[in-house]
Image (tube, rainbow, N blue to C red):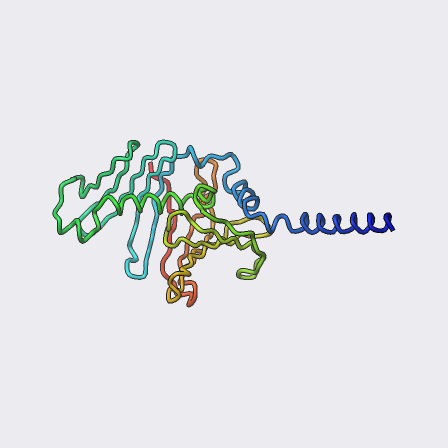
Length: 245
């Protein structure tokens, strides 16, 4: 009887361990993200890299939008430049976290322009967060970024078997609730869903990633197509078109 109990006990433990090992890749979300980072940033360059890119960002209501982006992760320097109907608007946050806005090279502009083009420091800070996180994907998605990460689930996305990982951000960026979609075959980063559970009427958005752009030994998703999540209505595209001198 003791032998039988012992054998059954060992069998039970073996089954549990077997299930754990078999399902480990699916359940361990942080492990999956670490494998994704190896694909895109094998030498851990992101935290010390400077990124200087020209981005085309057509939107349904603004098909001619372009942005020149300079982001230095080592020093904290940020600069973005856009052409508007009044000329060139440049937003800067320097290494000492000091912020300024220039309109055609001039820091003096009217209250009317400030209101019309949101020429304020809060908007500049939000722009820096937006580009640093979304253009650092997937390397920027770390435990410093979220409050909570759920166990990965396997599902099918556009005909591919994927890991689906839900995270709750410390600070909202588009939304506080993201779902990451990652290829189960090769750990390619495929999409991010932005969910709004606190606003049931808001269907949310999804970014789908395509292509790669190599910078400093890293692979950054080159094309980001934006859609409404429920209706799949097209919202816009972001494309890295080149590196700035």
